[in-house]
Image (cartoon, rainbow, N blue to C red; front, top):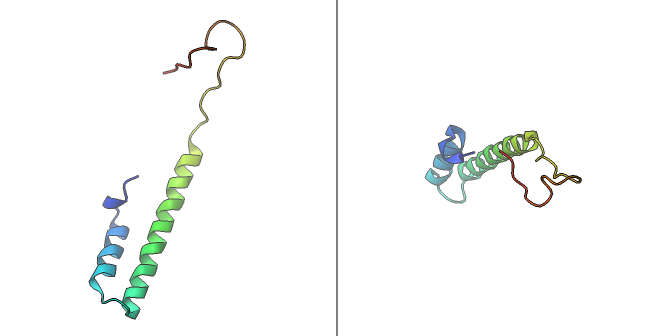
Length: 71
């Protein structure tokens, strides 16, 4: 997942860098940025959790015990 192309993150970073340090606007911009990053983190975690588990290695027989290859 590439966060560089996300419009919400781009807008939050632009707003945070444009405001003066120590202002209420800067604090609000950083809060929005953190929330956008947290939302993307949750989305990435959901995608990773949706991946199927890798196939198990063979436990008996002559094939698949010494070399783990699958397509």
